[in-house]
Amino acid sequence: MNRIAVYCGSSSGDSSLFKLAATELGDLIASRGMALVYGGARIGLMGAVADAALAAGGEVIGVIPDALTQDEVVHAGLTHLEVVGSMHERKARMLDLADAAVAMPGGLGTLDELFEALTWAQLRFHAKPIGMLNLDGYFDALLSFLDQSVSTGFLSERNRQLLLDATTPELLIDRLLNPS
Image: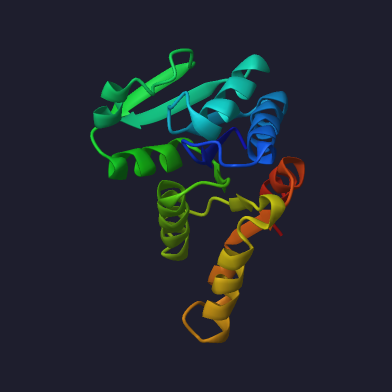
């Protein structure tokens, strides 16, 4: 595995645990010789994961829609920045560049990115592992919902298993590297 796409908030959330985990994840990706692919911003968890990967000597590739470059949120110190035309292009390009994807806590954008990657895996558009960093129970309700979707017949168990989860960055990276 050479590159991991990380989906996460442009906010840092209300707990220092989130930023600490983003820093740990960025450092871990770089220290294991992998590149980070992310949304290109300097703020929130996005900025924290990028800064940590850069500080550890890693390659960091940002992908940002042109409309967001006007808001001065673009990280100026990246290894490479790609400006695309839309959010849809961003999601497709990030997944195209990566060998795996990880979702950290975030809002609607993070969930959109995660579920599009999962939907594409379900449709067999790709076979890349997808993981979720479930910090402090942040995603417990979502994981319960997915399990309920299986029990009510709307999601197959096979497709439910497309989403790996762990409570620490190290465990999650290990699961992505050895998904079985």
